[in-house]
Amino acid sequence: MTDQTVTQNKIRAGLLSLQSLTVAFGLTALLATPATAQTQMAEPDSAPALIAQQYPQQQKRRTLLDILFGNPAQPRQQEVTRPPVQQPQRRSAPVKKKPVVTKPKPAIITPPQPEAVAKNPDARKIMVIGDFIAGGLAEGLTETFSQTADLQVINRTNGSSGFVRQDYYNWSKELPAILTEQKPAVVVMMIGANDRQPLTQKSVSVAADTDEWKKLYQSRVDEFLQVTAKSGVPVVWIGQPPYQSSSLSQTMLSLNKIYKTAAEQAVTTEDTTPQVVFSDVWDGFVDDKGSFTQTGVDVNGQTVRLRGNDGINMTAAGKRKLAFYAEKPLRQLLKLSSPDAPVSSDSKSNEPMALPVQKEITRIGPMKLNDLDQSGDDTLLGDTTVISKTATAANKPAMKATPHGRADDFSWPRP
Image (cartoon, rainbow, N blue to C red; front, side, top):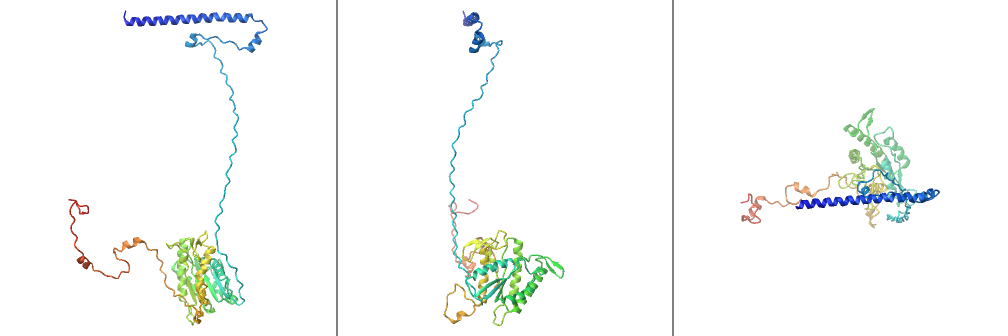
């Protein structure tokens, strides 16, 4: 008997055993069904309803065939969906916020300003005229001379005035009456911030910043100075500072040049005292590159904000700095000693100080270290020693040739 025949016999025996088990389970199910029916018939008639309520209907026992192949005749039980159980919400404990501790800002310690002293009845007057920038200058001068009893600052500025719109306010015509009324010892003039606009001459409009416009503007400045010369009152002319607008700043440079030229050509008095002194304030309101800046060094040496957010108006520190540029020429014209100057018993100390000589200011940018490379020379600036290159080459010892292949052999091409 071969192995294949043995294997087939074992499979047949297994199938017969499976059929026997299936028949046995089927008989068991058939016998169990009548017994259940007899039990139900033996119960009284009045009890079925009560029993049906108390005991659910007994399900039919599943056979091996039902387990293996299923019973399609038996209806499926409806799946009972249970409602979701709502879990009680847990209340989280309130989060305690940490108290926000605000650190106090460090207070800016400013030296207390002394109270202004009462002015003497015969105090000499410093009259400030001009536009709205001159109004800030008047405030700075008032603070500057607040401790001087014999000096009084008079503010007679007109914020919207200038030399262009003479139809609105003509300083050459209005000034004589003001001088007669106030009788100032010196006049401080600052104007030009409103003058960057076309100028009308004999019903003809001339565009700003043109050559013709500058000539007409120069004539109106000269006309104003002729009025002050006839009155004999000296004038301290304060130049215009730079502004945030580059085009406006360029115009202010042209106006400052006109003001300075007119001041230099003004007639001097018999004691050689200049009738008009021009004070340039430009460098006090620019950075190290010569550009407009809103911050800068004040009169106390502290870095503060000098200009407003509009890039035009002055802050309190800026007004005080403007007054600083006017203070020195005012003290010289009024023959006042500097507040920081030591008191001397010499009789010559009461003599007026000589005014500084007006020099041409050449504004150039800061020098850079790389600028020295452009000269093509290795000598220091200012060196007066002249060394002949031929003599240097003759006295220079001959360099020995470097052996090929050594580390300091830079000959090219390589051997």
